[in-house]
Image 1 (cartoon, rainbow, N blue to C red):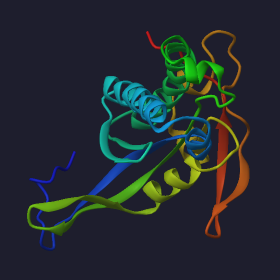
Image 2 (cartoon, rainbow, N blue to C red):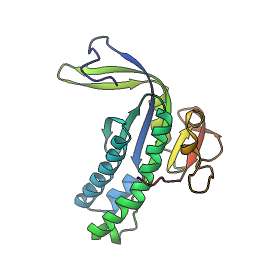
Image 3 (cartoon, helix red, strand yellow):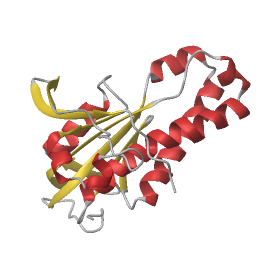
Length: 212
């Protein structure tokens, strides 16, 4: 995985075949309306902590935080399956771990009509990793379709997890079908304008995978 030290700031860049995962807190504007700033901050911290732990446990490399959004990269053999598993574990962790914890610890959240949720988008492909900025104030930036499409998918209000059909084709059986009942954990492929005139074949899922 490229790092700031391994990519030259001046005219440097590394091509990478990778899977990009974006996880976003759903209805963050509603969070701000329904809760005090202190409570909202506690909720965001709990959400980001859970998402970060799941990604790291699955060997994903977190590349940025943008408010309540996390972007991670997965590379290597089976990266598509690992990223999909991560997304389904994030869904489970948010619903089954973070929500109950917030209800127990924060009376304001317990009484509110706003419910913590997440949306994750994933795509795979080639991306150019470059360093952008100036000396002592720069960071790595991914340029390519995969990071842009993953970000757009995480913004759609269709399901908890959305992937491109090329992700599905690269995923293992265990991340396509439920180990409990053998049913497909993803919808059939459908054509969707994901924004900016970009049309993709996508699949959606509201399944969660329990963290072992």
